[in-house]
Structure formats: C-alpha cells, structure tokens
Amino acid sequence: MPIAIANRYARALVDVVSQKGDYRQVRQELESFAAVYSESAELREVFDTPALPLTEKLKVLAAITGKMGTTSITTNFLSVLGQNYRMNLLEEICRAFHKLANDRLGVVEVKVVSAAGLSETERQALRARFIDLTGKEVEFDFRLDRELLGGVLAQIGSTVYDGSVRGQLDRIRERLTGQ
Amino acid sequence: MPAFLVACLTGAVVAWGANEAPRSVAALVDSGQWGLSSNDPAVGARKASLGNTVKLATASVAPENAEGEEGAKHELLYKVINFVILVGALAYLLRKPLAGFFVQRSESIRKSLEEGRKALESSQAQLRNIEEKLRGLEEEISRFKAAAAREMEAERERLRQAAAAEAERILQFARAEIDNATRAAKLELKVYAAGQAVELAEAMIRQRLDEAGQRRLVGRFVGELTRKSS
Image (cartoon, rainbow over all chains, first blue to last red; front, side, top):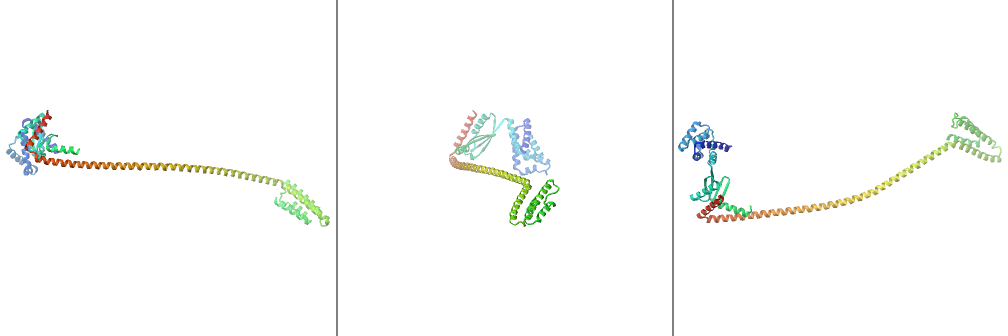
C-alpha cells in the first residue's frame, strides 16, 4: 500500500516537472532533503506529530528548503507531503520518481559493482558498451564490493552481466557439483 | 349271540342229567331269554324250530334210567344226536354272522397285509433313497475334498507368489535406498570437494590478483559486452 501511494505522488511530481522543470535537479533536491530527513530525528518528529500546527511545520520546511536552495517545484511538493502526513514515504517517493523520470527521459539505470575502483577510462568504456547494448542513455550507479574478488558485475533491471571472479568461481562450483 | 350259544350248550348238557331240564330249556326258549327279540319274524321262526328240537331231544332221553345197558347205548346215541343237532343248530344260526365276521376279518387282514406291503415298499424306497443319498454324499464328500485340495494348492501357490513379490519389492526398495544413499554420499562428497577446490582457488586469487589483473578482468568484461552488443 505505501508503495502504491508513493507511486501516485511520484507520478504527479513527474507530470509537473515534465511541464516546467528539470528531472535531474528535482531528483537531486528530493534525495538531498530525504537524506536530511532520514538523518534528523527532530525533523521527523516535527512532521510526524499532529500536536504541531501545520503552519509551524511549513515554516520549518521553508527554512530548510531555503537553506538548501531547492526549486519551487520541490518545495511545493514537500509542502504537500507535509500537509498530508506523507513525509514518511519520502524515500519510496524518491525511488519511484527516479524510475519514472528515467522512463520519461529514456534513460537506463545500470548498477555496476566492482571489486576495485574503476578508472574514468573504464567507466567511459562501460558507458559506451551499455549505450550500444541498450540503445538508450545510461545512468550508472557504481558500487564497490571486495567479495567479488575481481572483475565487474552489472545489472540493468532484472538482467545481470556477471564478469566477476566470484561469479566465475560460483559457476565452477556448480559445474563440479553437477547442479 | 354268545348268550344264546351258552344257553344252548347249558341246556343240552343239563338235559343229559335231569328230566326237568328239557322243560327248562323249552321254557327259556319260550320266555325269550335267549337274547332274541320276539318282534323279529325270522328269529321267531328259528325260536319255534329250536324249541321243537329241544322238546324232541328231551323226550327221547326221558326213559334213561329205566333201561340199563340198553339205555347206556341209547344215551350215547342221544348224546351224539344231541351234539349233531346242537352243532347243526349252531352252524345254522352262526353261519351268516361268522361268514360276515370271517369275511370282515379276512378283509382286515388283507388290508393289513396290503398296508404292510406298502409300508415295506415305502421303507425299501426310503432305504434305496437313503442309500442313493449316501452314495451321493460320499461322492459329494470326495468332490469337496478334491476341491478343497485344489483350493489349498492354489492358495499355497498364491501365497508363495505374494511372498516372492513382496521379497522382490523389499529387495528393490533396499536397492533404491542404497542407490539413493550412494548418490547422496557422492553428491555430498562432490560438493565438499568442489567447495574445497573453490576455497583454495579463492585463496590463491586473493593472493595473486593485483592491480593489473583487475584491469585485465574489467577489460575482458568490456570486451564481452562489445561482443554481445555487436
């Protein structure tokens, strides 16, 4: 149920941004505010408690967004969430907005996990290969995982491209056991 | 009828020793105490005839004591005549009743004999029937014994086959269990060996994989993506 509600809010925000905004900027502003919100217990308490009047909540929100320099679209959207007591769904809304925005922009998100940090040359090479592979603009999410031992593991949606040493060892183990 | 016979015999015997007796017999006949009804005309005629006969007999023996030796002969003659008359009278009187009695008796005996013969035939028929049944029973018993023997043999064969099938089933189950256990043990051993081999390989890779090796692995991954995209 919360995911459905988050999708509904995210879809509304995407519609607004598609008319007069920048998806990436709004997304970045939302993620920044979500990080602040998740880190600050006082801020969560302010938006969660019904004891505080709505005007006071909006004053707090305006102060924070003012300091963060968010656009009016983001500020208004956060105000709506505060009025409707949906601020606790902010992380889900961010994820849903990211996905919807990428769909609207024709961008494919690629999660890349490597055992060691990748150089810029390697990243560019990966970008070029995935653009060729998908025929769309790609957006990388690079992460490190030492348990891969070596190589790279990339994932687009539910498709996994496993070039890691861990994956090769797992495949060798499966062949040896006949499973 | 028996009273009449007794009276006749008594009268005749008494007449041999007393002169008054014939009169007594005649009076008895006249008085109707012979057991015959005076209303019956035939009986009345018979009674009159018998009375006359008695009177003649008594008159003929009256001078018995006066005659002596000659008288003894006459007495014997009279006795014989008297006896003959008595027998004739009795035969005359008893002929029809006795004939009817004997006919009836003979019929009764014949019926009894017939019934006895029928009973004998019936008994013999029953005996033959029983003997037949006994012979049939013996045959039935023989057939039953033969059938029981056949069924016992069939049941023995069925039990033997069932036992053999059960033994075969148990054997197959045991073989399957052994095969499963063997396969499980082999698989466990294979998994263990594979795990050991992979752990050993992982340890060696951790020791030997350097920066250049990492670069080569990434380059190989990019090359594979290139092949997939082309």
